[in-house]
Length: 273
Image (cartoon, rainbow, N blue to C red; front, side, top):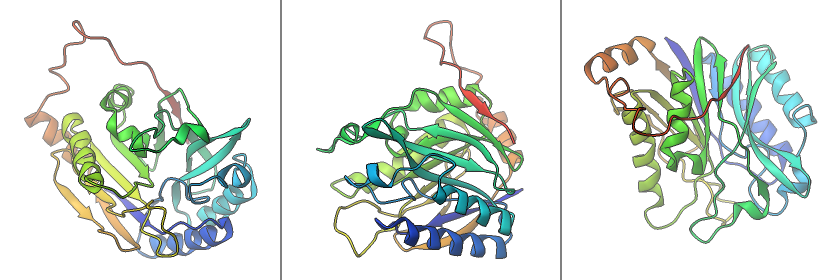
């Protein structure tokens, strides 16, 4: 069993405020026996034009402080940040082990130019799927809008991912929360793979619509083992790799694929701790 903390926090435009929330959540995760803590997309700072000013390299002060907290509590971290990218930024998911060492980073591939938004005005796309080995799991990294693209998840599974981590700052709007819950469950079901999905909690101080909560753990059969609803909180869940084997013996859909009649998925980059 791997114990994972779903850290559903509200995100401010102030990185210092967000850092304190991360530290507090890590303390609570450690006290409840978690070995991995997952935070939302854009934990560094809230989405908006200010992300270019707040963006930092991966050895910048924000992630250095998070790494110190991970080391203090001996809890590995998955978290969303922004890296400078010329006139734009990369929307990056980072993975730190329990010693605070950077294991992997994933730059969001699919940008949210949808529902009237244009993420690509501020964010440059990544181009490489990433699997990270952490706490006995091979985690396929996914960010928000990526969840609408099943081919990315197939690429991750083909690289041996035995769980997906989806971090998000999911926006409100007609059918949006329904889409989130349905897509997270669908990605788990079609790949018979544990799916850890963590979103921002709603922040009552702002009205931009980012953050619906609904952080979830979904098992390989599609059963929702935890759903945090909209409230901020830290909830510890357990992943049993043996459940994946049992489900895949019953539903061997991955074995039934026909790569001879459709294009094979591309290779992914693997980070190792």
